[in-house]
Length: 488
Image 1 (cartoon, helix red, strand yellow):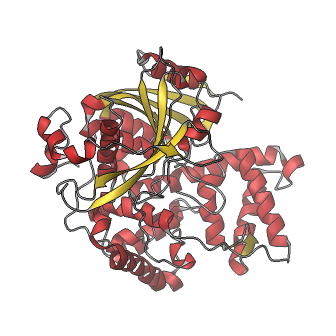
Image 2: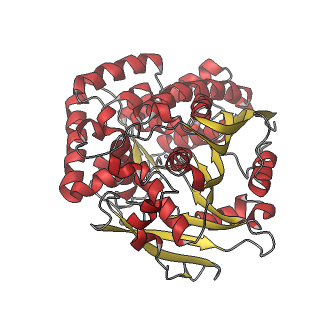
Image 3: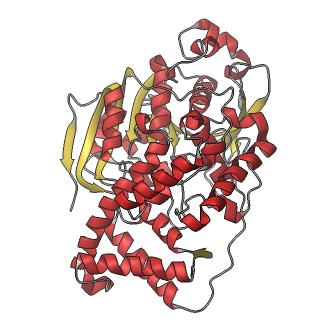
């Protein structure tokens, strides 16, 4: 999930009989069922001329509908970087940047060059992929205009009818262009795709390192394929019990807390940022900026930001106090300048379409169908959490998504081993969400970084790095949950 400025890396209780066989990795019938897919031989090639020759890409096929493997197929773009050494190799480490809606084929290069220690790279070959419907993996698109792609909408009585129409139009456009394909763009099917990747690579098990939404994707894999799940590190975790509308509402709750911490920090650093000498003054500066943007949108980074847009940015703006202060300073400067910025760059809608395809595909049946429910919830949460509450609870495309024939979201309840990493003050995947995932992954252990801020931990010189590296290199989870202190 992304805003115009900040990338968010940021991710079934009962199933039909035909899917239960697929969820049992040791059943020979499951392998026979998918034999044409698991026996593929990828045609590996150099990903790009500017990338290392050892960084290879390929495209494989997966079934659109796993209950009908002889039917339509999807392309799945995968990548690998053979970083392991012959004497130390343990297997493959599957990587994903979060989302949903984010491509992941380039993640191995990022992880190898910037985040993973040598001890881990020597153990694993790094594998990335664009999830189904995303990037280069049979991408979905709905033909949305740039205005229609803006889904973080503030509740206003005067625009409520227009917002209901927008949500309905979004869903209708998607089904007109993508049809039945949409109900198969789900986390559960992406987890099945991951197991095809495992088989194609010739691995009995896979290890996994994922961020944000990827923690839920990893948890779903452990539920479907527990005996093929090796060493799983789930960084900045999503609570499976809160999918997906509940995740947005948690953003509102924790963004408010992050904003309060930010006003205190920024007031202490008023000599640098000049945003207010007291937390109350800093808060007023921000809301004055919001009001100004409502009167006249701010030309910023090629986009025109309304007050609602500025508030929407805030869900990721304030978990790092310094970055938040710098951002507000830049926004104030842009508001005070009269010149226009560069024209917005036209782009496709795959990211936002991919996001809502997964969100509504996973939990569409759980979203209210009555628009008035969204009105009342938005009003309630605007009072509770004025920064983001109405945006979180306002109407979304899932209110009109077709759910016929789809699967319910996967219920997580297993004893597979996993290591959960969590900052105390992460407003995008709050601590309560990680605790929720920890409860249902009964074989997991959790590292909490007390005082830790920001979204994403491993490889960023956190006190959690040592524990995560030890687990990935030895396979041994800590004997009990760990709490360590963030570096000031």
